[in-house]
Image (cartoon, rainbow, N blue to C red; front, side, top):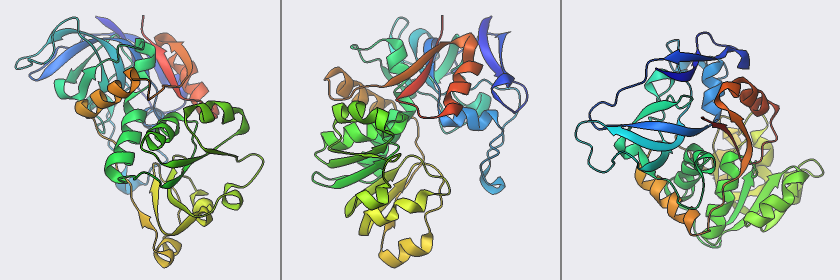
Amino acid sequence: MMKAIRVHETGGPEVLRLEEVPRPVPGPGEVLVRVRAAALNPPDWYARRGFADIPPSIRPELPLPFTPGSDVSGVVTAVGAGVTEWRAGDEVYGLVRFPRVGDEGGRGYAEYTTAPAGHLARKPASVDHVTAAAVPMAGLTAYQYVHDVIGLRPGSRVLVNGAAGGVGHFVVQLAADLGAYVIGVASGRHETFLKDLGVAEFVDYTRVRPQDAVRDVDCLIDTVGGPGGHTLLPALKDGGTLSPVFFGDYHDEELARRGIVRRGGQVHSDGTQMAALAELIDAGRLRVGVDSVFPLEEAPKAHERAERGHIQGKIVLRVA
């Protein structure tokens, strides 16, 4: 048996319950991971709420009960049939079975979880498990947007909205590492943090409207979305690229009129790209922001922290 967080009904953070459940067994092509830390991500609280904010036509089915969590860092304790790249004792991290959700997904809020061998990479040697767990979904989202979705080029002017958040703080570093001129939008308390990460120009949205302060950017990467997403469009040059990470209202008619190309995508598990992120971390070219750490049994408090917003980096559950 093991301890895990289970959700039996959708609702607020209080529906997250610590329970004793059977320890999983790795199937063919899978490994069993002793979880040392698991990070929170927006899909965790979307699922907890029953995806109420997603249009019914594309709302995922979510059988109850389930264990949330797709970002894990831990130690391999057993391997399934056909696995040759991992063995017991290996320290690993990764985004597990995403974008699948519920008990078909990662089940990271637990003492043990199974993972397809190809979804994992060796944990960066220079950081602990708590820090490593903060990387997978946010880091992969940033990596896949910058390299695959957008194909960002050196010298591009890039505006990152929500630059201090989980995805945002990785985007600004990866873009700056490629030689882009990065403009970060966040509240004033994040200015030093973001400039240390490579932001060339900082905009405090609590003091000035970003659309009034910035013009002629080649690419807008919006990690906030929502009904006000379109308000940043004046900062984007005609023919530029809009890359929203979350749902938002971007006035499609204006995009078409101005020739703005919309490029987005769904982050997905990828052990090879996790290994690339680990190399950047160990080389000192990618820093990991951790907002706060909670023990596994305090998952409800961690979700309450997430819902208060204004997060700098990631929220992580430490698994004893």
